[in-house]
Image (tube, rainbow, N blue to C red; front, side):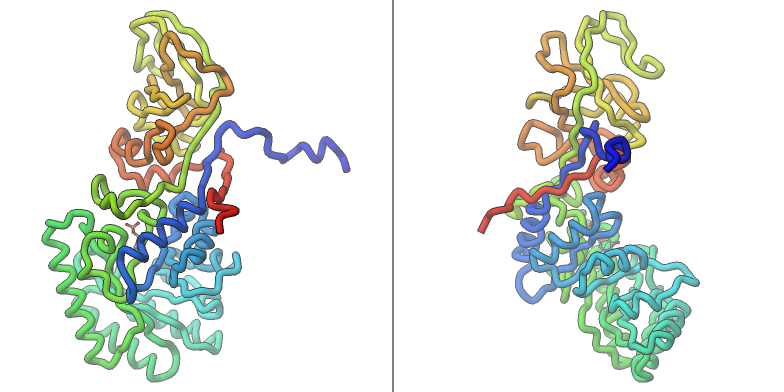
Length: 392
Ligand SMILES: *Cc1c(COP(=O)(O)O)cnc(C)c1O
């Protein structure tokens, strides 16, 4: 073997790593299943590369914990899950006109129709494959995003029923999505639940008998038993994160699965009056020691976190100073630090070692933890661990 060729493309000690603990995902999926109780199926949502955790490892962890279903947005995500060897129930829900449903029908993926036109595309795909498509119908109950309007719903269910009787497809589910499930007092919750029940009545009247009716995301599943129906679609909570600050009851005992960490590229003393990073947004009032963290907005560290984020070094929190750059940012280690170049920097994680959580990062960046974990990536090396390996 050519040693030079062997070195090219080989991962050196990485500047930074995203560590995903699949044992935490399994734990969270099991806890959520216990929380919603028997008789409610669990769909673990693994879209968006498993909320940034890695779609395939997340999917495998969810199945190992007993998730009956996986959920993804795009057709391509569904085929990626199948290509990884998954054979369980799998739903996707976001296509554009002209996409080819045939490989999804052939791969036994449940696909979603919002309109009669989309249903017609699915029917054509089913005919081309020579198999019945598994179709779920989505009704818009008040989010005004995807799904059939209430006005179009009678036509959609009637068309689906005709296609079912013609042997082209089976309607396996009817579903909708909540607008404000994290806010229990929001009037949209009652209104959407009522609209969903009405839509189910319309479907039943034309003879549809779907296997699963579903409405709840994580917050709905956790907070509002009446929206659980036959199945809940849990994304964020499966990764151990709160759907909104303070939503998750402590008793649910979720564990964040992702830790973002880096190694200090450099540690140095700066004098009072030194401006730090682009634009000198921050100027040292006293002499201090700064550390250089070798990840930036190209890696999904939000530039919005400039001057606001905190990270942990040696169990202590330290603030970001000045602008987050494309590849790096600067932290204030304080004048008497013992930190050295090469030391570990915990950006966010479970909080067990003094580090912030993704939720704290979200608050500092004026966003939600969903966006923090799905956008982090870039040049982080991805490491999947199983902290329960060896357990019985
Ligand atoms: C993303 C998504 C979910 C999961 O929502 P969480 O709040 O992460 O639990 C459920 N259903 C649909 C349709 C989604 O797009």
